[in-house]
Image (cartoon, rainbow, N blue to C red; front, top):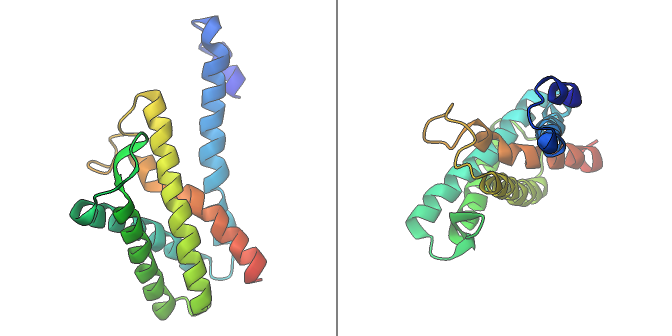
Length: 179
């Protein structure tokens, strides 16, 4: 389909390969990673697990932002995302853990405290890596925000980039340790 789209919108044949590859990569990246949410949803606790991953990643994002703004001194990845700090990243892990603990205590007793610690680290670190990867891709494309759909939040994909990297990890964690 990507190639048929390229054929139907052909303007500069010299750029067809790179534009088609970019379009294909974008579709595969988003659909491939986020499709794990569908697999997670099929679990007997699927709704709770989806809510858990949202709490962990969005809570971690918010925690990283606010802790980084308040205490951040050491840059995390200045070429990729100049405002992110190590202190913010650690704050994001802490807030993500607190959100996960609240989820465990209120609606996911399915997870042990050991599971919660492991998942806080895994989802927190990979969620932040997903955010950095998306920032890297935006910078390489010369784009600040992935869209203006969600004002003051950097675009819709900025709300999904952490989830895109965390969802496969949660899915495989469930398969390996909780089946």
